[in-house]
Amino acid sequence: MVLVNDALTGIDLDAAAALLQPWRLEKALRYVRESDTRQSIAAWLLLREACLGLGLPDVPVVAFGEHGKPFFPDHRSLHFNLSHCPEAAACAVAASPVGIDIEAVMTPDMDVMERVLSGEEIRRVLASPDPAVEFTRLWTVKESYLKLTGEGLTDDLPGLLGRAEGVCFRSVVRDRYVYTVAE
Image 1 (tube, one colour):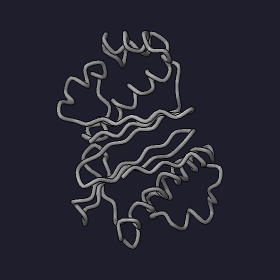
Image 2: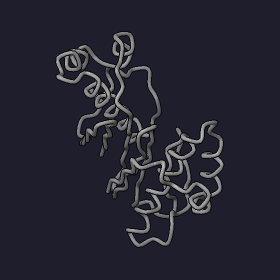
Image 3: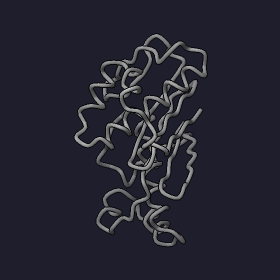
Image 4: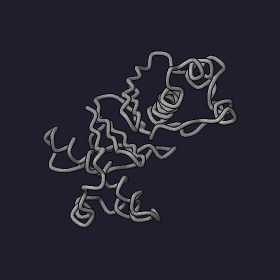
């Protein structure tokens, strides 16, 4: 299940804050900008909506793995991942490990592309009818994979997808953002 909210300005922050677990509220309030707080809260509200839709009374207690990946210790057969950007928030919930990343469409420069993409991926971006969208899609593919595995950022971003054998990636492109789910 994937839920996305791209109407972030419509969230009543005071009402929403009461629905967050204390650690998540603290995390959301650490952001300097209200827009970042709003994004963080929006992602949690999507998780809450998914949990309610699955028949749970609320979001279960959350714990964190070695590299910070969140999980439900009392519901090991239910996996989730959250992401947000200035344009939208996203949540993926599945019966197996899942990762999701959402990013506003970004135009890369060659230095950035050389640090994060393989030669073939750079050629794909440069040959694309919309290089900014293709770069953003590839970025979300890589980030969703890292979030799926829970390993965190790596120095080998260009070669990362060579390790992703057997992983299914689903990317969705919207006008202002792209998200990818890795399962």
